[in-house]
Amino acid sequence: MKCRTLFLFACVVLRSAQGRAQETASWTYNGVNEYRIVPNVVYSTANNYDCKLDAYVRNNPGHTTPTVIYIHGGGWVAGSKETSVMSLLPYLEMGLSVINVEYRLARVSLAPAAVEDCRLALRWVFKNAKQYGFDTTKIIVTGGSAGGHLALMTGMLDPSYGFDIPTDWDYTGVEPKVAAIVNWFGITDVKDLLSGPNKQDYAVNWLSNLNDKDIIAQKMSPMSYVRKGLPPIFTVHGDKDQLVPYTHAVRLHEGLTKAGVPNQLMTIPGGRHGGFTKEEMTRVFTAIKEFLKKNGLLEQSGH
Image (cartoon, rainbow, N blue to C red; front, side, top):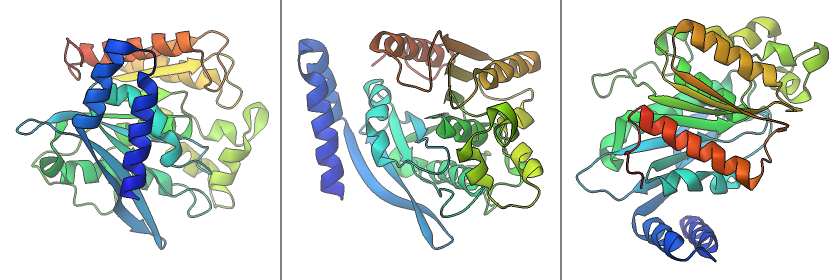
């Protein structure tokens, strides 16, 4: 599996270099020589299911590296970390280490399992920071759709909310905290998707036959955890999104602003649920890089 992952990564890097001469010659060197891949690390086992992650570790001896935790989408019912490899490339190009996380989908465990798993993935990063050179003061969580929701939950929760199992989080003398969240069209109000005009089958399936669905949905909603002191949050959302209402992003932005949380909402006019154009993606990642630089999470000179 390790060879397969390395081969895939090399192919992606080489493909990205076609027709881009000097710029991608540098990127190819960085990708091939500055990273090592540690695939399929089991970070948690629950309900007889091994939750795994892949670590793309920057070779930077004697130094620590800002690190992105990437969480795939799929409505909590589908998707895998392997299908998200292409989405990691911009962060690798920035010179960041990347942790590509999988979690229990609805067919394995219903809500709140995915949230618990992603919090455990964060715990794994802090627990193993010294071994892999992760800068625990510069942990960024990102994902799209359900992955955006899980990125928000991972970064907005703290152990007091009861989703951290086990509870022995303290490995460094400091409670593990996220430094920034990059939310790609994530769900911010789960209850809104269970019935009415915004009903979505994937949300219904994630809660399925659970008792007290409305209460659980509220506990699974990032809007429930908006408060002063959260990490900076960058949100990108298309205003014609057919699967996650654009209003979710607007309400989050308004709530964070009212609470005094540094945040930015980047609207894609006419944008649907992802599938943005090349020009739109270029603008988004330019804005993300500036957001990370502004918050001290990326070198001003870039990579």
